[in-house]
Length: 147
Image 1 (cartoon, helix red, strand yellow):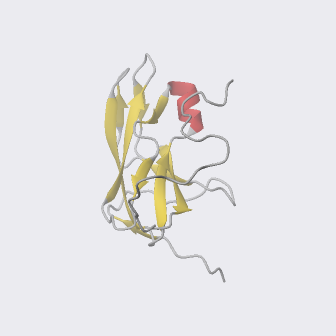
Image 2 (cartoon, rainbow, N blue to C red; image 1 turned 45 degrees about the vertical axis):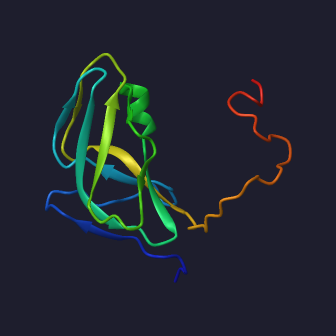
């Protein structure tokens, strides 16, 4: 028996597809579209899954794109990764964006994204006048490590 917390999953609609891994040991749980949707070129669509989850405290759910949809159709999660906080109990809705030049047809039951649940400690916040020094990077940002 594992000491890991449980992810409680609720189907909100009889036609909702159960969360499942494509292969044993996969990190991502497949999220499937509840209803058919057409997404035109360079358009977005909010696609319901008919699924709700109870992410345990100290954990976060991340909704991430499926690489095959991105490669074949230019379809990705608009706000990748979408964040599911531990207190949220509503339907998981995936905002997809079509970066391609052709309309993409999503059928009911198609896998549209993945849910990855990761540890996310809730930290105490302390406002300070200065931050401690770091090794190497400091305040260097975008492109600071070169090519």
